[in-house]
Amino acid sequence: MALPCAVLLALALTWWLWPQPDPLYTVTILPHLGGGYTMPHSINDRGQIAGVSRRADGTGHLFLWQRDKGMQDLGPVVINSVHINDVGQIAGTMRDPNDENRAFIWDPNSGRRMLPTLGGDHARACGINNLGQVVGEAETDLEVGHAFVWDALHGIRDLTPSDTRDTRTWSINDAGQIGVFTGDGSLLFQTGQADHLTSEPSPVVGLPYINNNGQVVGLSRRVKGRIDILVWHPDSGTKKVAQLKGTFPGAPQINDAGQVFYWQALRPRFTLFGRRFLTAPPANYLWDPQKGSISLDARVPTQRGAALSIADLNKHGCLVGAVKSDNASRIQGVLLQPIPDRWEK
Image 1 (cartoon, rainbow, N blue to C red):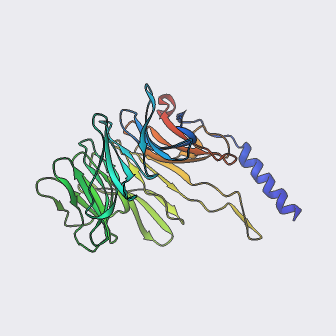
Image 2: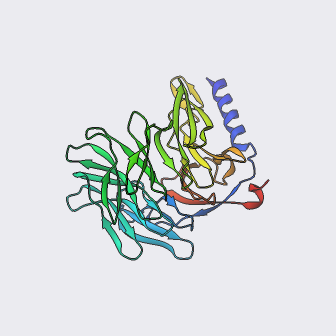
Image 3: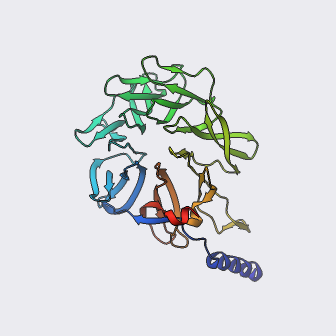
């Protein structure tokens, strides 16, 4: 028993003392609203950040952070994803007077507005573009979740080809293109006077995201035990940016510069006598069209043993996420900004 323990200790010390590559980002720690928990969810191209932070009483509140104005409390919110556009509008999910989840849009000028459902009790917001169009998932009168798009002019519209099929959507670009996940695959939906779905499904699945250039990023399991991260455009076809093994990864996202971030849960490094040792947090990656795949965990200056999770990126390559240390229950929100000199090397 002493020998395996000594080997494990030596390996752990080697990992702990191994020199790390130069960081590619500067780190800004975001404040909290009194409860020691801040989880950024979205960053726009102006550097405004929206997310959820806990107050001292433990309730989750929507926040808007700006470098020159600091932290702004925008009221109660369901601890779910929230999204901000370049106008400063925020889409999220709140509790209505009946304690049901309902999508909303918050505007800097008019405040919060609750959005309708598709006939059921629930709705959640999953994305917003710079025109104020909100996408998400809403319950129908048949208690089926359907992808929807909402705007102030047309109201809420169902994006589902079948009344009985569950569908989801997570993003919309400024051209009104929406990736809709049907369970059988992904379809590209185009809003406008003549709403329509493309006749052929896109090759990506797994909650696809779309940028303002019409590039869609998603997942594809073509080989057992392997998951491809794909970028697809109707005109240029499909490009594989990474291949992951084993555990199903989180949904990748793509910015207008064509950069993709993705993460993957990792198995424990060692299992001995039925016990797991050196359990690793999820690994975070950024794929860049010029640099290829980059391990963000190795290039972001965080404390040893801290777990990093990335939530969003803007067209300037700035990322937002959170850091949790092994020996602390607090979660700190972080803004990662590229260091130009090191990034250009």
